[in-house]
Length: 407
Image (cartoon, rainbow, N blue to C red; front, side):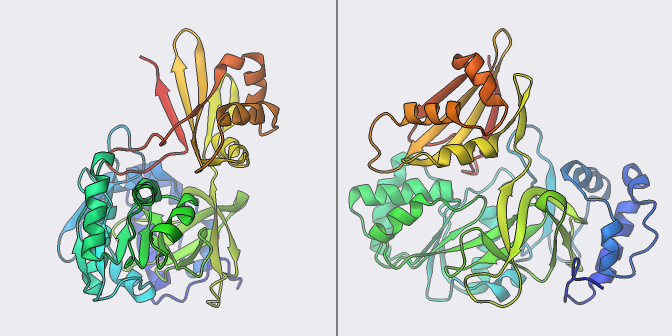
């Protein structure tokens, strides 16, 4: 037996077989799994087709899962536009297992939960469930706007806040504002993050604002729930999977997840999130394989008849000195076709002219075919320097690619 689909979780094979039976009971998916007669070992998963978001949505719409105990909670699964697609979890949101592996908080901590609440977004409640296990004192801050930063920062300093959590794109301007004001969060020891990649700009501001603070991350989705944990000793793109997550790296380095939770509600069986990854030895020294996430591989969009890979473009832009963050915005005009705007947030102290330097770099790069479209029609490409990227007002999350229809 190889270790391609290895897990030490108890009842793993029985749990996977039960998930397969549920999926085969969905009429729209029955043919998809008809050739999978039985799963006698985890290695038999190599014969199971990968699942994507649409497949899972079809299954959940039919199954409408219910928790065995307590409430069944629904949260938005995936994107932030259009009709919500739901994911399910029981009371507690599976955080007991996370607490067994990951302990940034304890009873003496004063924790600020900065993830937005409501509107089917799950992170605020996920971290409240975690905080409940730690015995800490919590502040349910939720989302705040820029006009509120000053008063809340003074409050955090006065109260001696020891921990704050949120998406990195939400935390960056808050900590950056503290640096501008000269506010010191001397008691801040932990910065918790999930929902998107770590923002390197925080590494610039935190040593000035909160010299004791260290980052602690969680990785996952509403479909998989928490899949891995990260500590200050880990690289910010490297994760230690939870025992209940069977992680597999397939073709093109695409990651798929299988839930080994005996009472899990989402029937996750070889579910692809669109992330790519590789197995590495973590710098923290914990033995065994760790998962390095290489970024998304589903960022391609048709632009003027050519495929534009937003991730590749943003990697090019990130190499320009002075770029802190960037985002691709595609706008479709009925009369003139699509335009591509690259929004760039400058690093502190960046000299003027960044937009021009980024534009020249894109036009001179070989990141993909769309550079040809820009050269044919220079007006199709714009670079704009901005204080912040476009984000979801409800969740604070930033997508690398934003697509719009002109009105």
